[in-house]
Length: 218
Image (cartoon, rainbow, N blue to C red):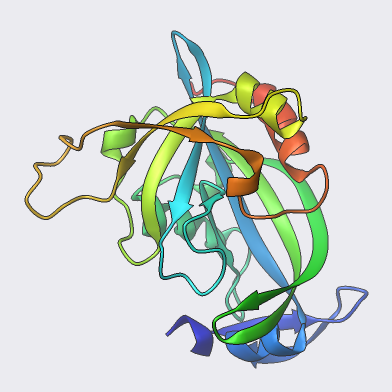
């Protein structure tokens, strides 16, 4: 169970102070480290931003759109090892040296969940990478990811800047048992800022701007 995972915890100066179960980390509000990785795909129509939709039964932010792949660093785990999140959630076997570091952000907030008030204080290392995969080629982790979507990166930046109300995204939902691999139907949805997991002010704009500068996949 995720709530029983052990996480390293830190003080206000980001000095390691111990290890704690994930449920306790969020109940008390200990600082901890997380890994964020955003994927983009270059197409004839331009660069696309890839993002996931969280499962409806997630304890935090169910059904909202989110970072392509992300997760907590487990106790003793390095950020280099946290690249495992890409393969676990999406079936993408990228190596850490194929990722481009974008920035580190430090944020804390409180929110209500089915289990009560949670206090989330994270130091997040944010990365980007180009992926050649089409949406149908991702292998979604059934208990974490409901679907995977992509939309023009330039339009997503405009939306996060407040210059447009929504963007049309194309996506696929998780692999039904009876569906042949690579034969999932595409869906088209209108996405808005309010449908994304809340992040610190400027997070999405900064991410999209830096992803525009990412070198194409060689």
